[in-house]
Amino acid sequence: MRGRVIAALIIGFCFGFFGSIPVAGPIAALVLKRGLTGRYASAALVGIGGGIAEAGYAFLAFWGFATYLTQYPMIEPVSRTLAGIILIGLGVSFARYKSSAPGAIPTSSDSHAKSLLLGFTITALNPTLIATWTAATTTLYSSDLITLEPVDAIPFSLGALVGIISWFALLTVLLKRYQGRFDQARLTMMVRIIGILILGLGIFFAVKAGLYFAGRD
Image (cartoon, rainbow, N blue to C red; front, side, top):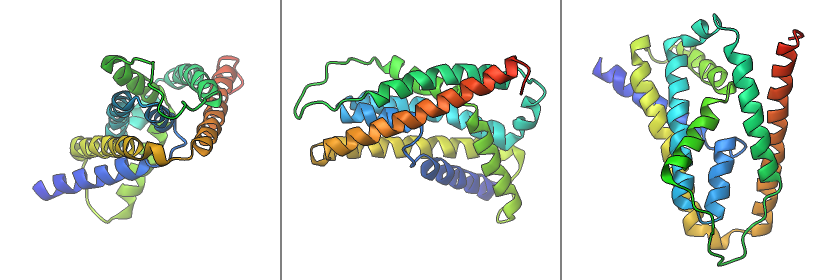
């Protein structure tokens, strides 16, 4: 039992940490953008808030709630609508991103609660994550490498939470330590490209939701 719990923690940590590394997601883009503008505490808290919400998805997927969510068909289109609105706004913001002048003092003030809630809300309203974590846990179950039970959803999701937070904390530390060595022009271009990708994702969600409510999906 104890060994199974430890295994679930480690596997959840690996899934959370390595799954968070791609920078094309909205949370990664937010952390990157705020880190580049010197708002390091806000960047870390956005990552923590997103990690809490994503760990909830990991728990639900591991425990098998993806099956039960299909009993409530309105959940998906409503979440797609909200996610589309938020992602379109983020995408436009990132696509218009301009890097700060070297040595500039950031003027934006972000409360801890606001940053934490922002990360949590954006992740909680991302309907693709339940599919992502369902696929991950299905792969884990079918691998036969380790035997896990639904009760292990708690240590698995805790491990995922620690993994996600650890990656974004590391990213924030790297941004703070090496900011002066980054090529600002390339970073600006990267943030803008990510913004365009997020904008496209937001439009996709909005269109899918619109088709559902129009009775065509």
